[in-house]
Image (cartoon, rainbow, N blue to C red; front, top):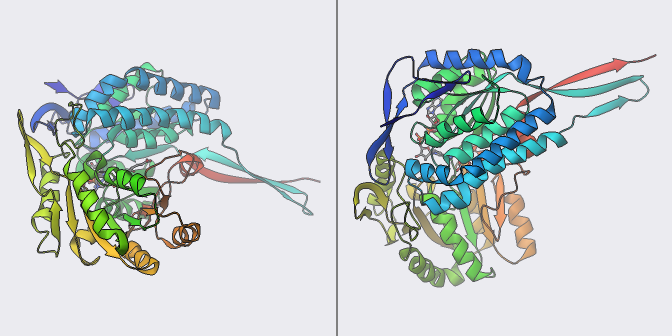
Length: 481
Ligand SMILES: NC(=O)C1=CN([C@@H]2O[C@H](COP(=O)(O)OP(=O)(O)OC[C@H]3O[C@@H](n4cnc5c(N)ncnc54)[C@H](O)[C@@H]3O)[C@@H](O)[C@H]2O)C=CC1
Ligand SMILES: O=C(O)/C=C/C=C(\O)C(=O)O
């Protein structure tokens, strides 16, 4: 059985504890590799290595940093098929999705930030009348911690470490213990691309030990985290009193507002995707679908019909639309909402059952499930289920739609389907979400600010926002005679 290793100071190391965790293949329910159960000793080694590497790395030219990131990006693409198969095996997602989305995006993250840094500039202010000029430097922070989740493993891991590295920081990173494999493969890629030792350190292990040691370490200056809101809250409570910089990308319960005047066919097709892509395990999925009353019955029939035709199956099968959920505990968590749907006031329109896939009977498969609800206040509409489960509900007016959209603790993303420009402008302005898509979903331009309002997080990733997060502004005021 393969042992995943930590990557510390340019070396591949076993954990100090010599303890290992089981890594499961969601599609079969079997253990297929072991990962280090790292503790604070491994994290301390990684932080030390990063500190030692920082003086040189922070002084390398932009051109050199940019070239190394470019090489990493190219190497990800050269290893695309290996990474696709590894990601699907580790996470349960269809290989087709990893091939179309996850791995190309990981390569794009490195490519994008290798270019963005060459355009990143600072401000100068001429203090007219005072004979002085102010200019602002942006200095790398030092050692930074990057902690990522299991839903888009390599995609979100690289979304953090690429901007951190290119702006001159040294990184201690921890992928989710549930999906560690592609981060391990990435450590080899970075090593071979010539990233100097200690600049990137990847420590594997549990959130409560390895992750906790990273967020508590006094020499880690910033934490970039994506994951659940409860974990984000815990990280903020721990790290904020230590005055660490924090970027927290947390949960969502995103509204999908469908108006009668939309492009119906495009909306229907995209809504199936925004509901069930990656088994609904994307923080941006539109899990609360609100439909204008005049087309509600038609939409309900057409949507349920399309959803019931989705194929649940093994990630390697070309016919698979919906793969396995990421873990048994997660499957049970998602299923518990379906199981209690009626108690919560919902009516299951399609789906609702676990699925047995022939030859993979212990895998974590679940039917894509649509539940009709009559109130936005029910648990199904208020709590992040983070699986292949969406709710449907009609609305009568634009005002009601807005109220429903904003009636949750989260504020990550929203989708609006309409061809009315005035309505688009009104709703986009009033919806409490960091990201609003109109007549599309998950169309990404990496230059744009990415993140949420309310309980969906603090700060923004993407473009110059990420480069600003990973640097500290320092103003210099020069007076002249
Ligand atoms: N992208 C998103 O929005 C995600 C949302 N979730 C939500 O969170 C729920 C719980 O899922 P989990 O796997 O438990 O996510 P999580 O938030 O616990 O895990 C995300 C990352 O944080 C790490 N972590 C956990 N505790 C930590 C700590 N004390 N200090 C530092 N790092 C820590 C984990 O090891 C992992 O790398 C899901 O059911 C889902 O609702 C989960 C994953 C991703
Ligand atoms: O496209 C992105 O940058 C991010 C996508 C998704 C997440 O952050 C998530 O699911 O957590």
